[in-house]
Length: 309
Image 1 (cartoon, rainbow, N blue to C red):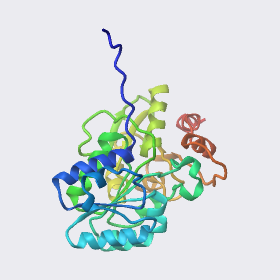
Image 2: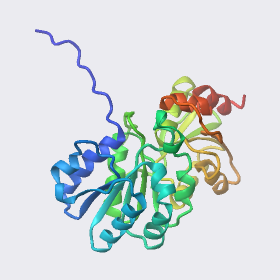
Image 3: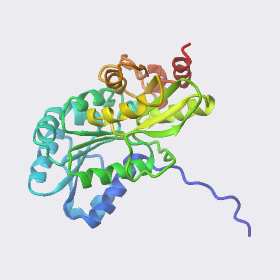
Image 4: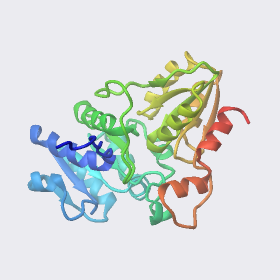
């Protein structure tokens, strides 16, 4: 009997990829610990597989990072997860001192970044994390896109021994970009058009929007960035400036302290524009895409800037 055409499974959200991948990584490395701020739900795969290495510390984010720093000093490799806004703002001092100043090999995995929290509202949105983490020397900052890149960043964080902040979304999954993502480069060239403008995508929604723009207008080039700390951006700027003279950075972040602002300083002889989440405060609810539309981060807005309309 003909079973009919195969149905492709929907891409898995990055925050779920994190839970699954860390669970598997811990089977091979007993230094790995998982600390959560009450985000795991009723069944967390890491807690099921490694109950003696899973710690739900509740909504005490600063204390959770302080505890992770202490555990790292004892030789463990803690991975800490909480909402992005609570990691970088509520627990910002603990991140600054423990990860930045002391250089503890702690990895903060921060879902619900940008406005991916949607209906949860402004208290749970985070459009300031790039600015905060970029200002803390020594912390690797990554915003992976798709499953392959998310897994690669997790493995890099464990192997490198450097403090990491990894920005993730909420419930939407994304197909990986083409190519080998085991070791993300400073710049991934997704598409090289024959026009003067190159889109530079950052994070999940920024990359999704850029892919849609290039599909509609193939003359645009598209470069994707995963690592966004100052050292990584300095290397990315060398690659980017050799390819184009005009760039439009697409990022779910405020303009202040954005990746676009950093790249503009690193490439003073290039034109750097930005399509971002603006400076407004959202007072009404909606889905992730609803909120982005209210903030003006849309495909028409991107194409307008790309085409100098």
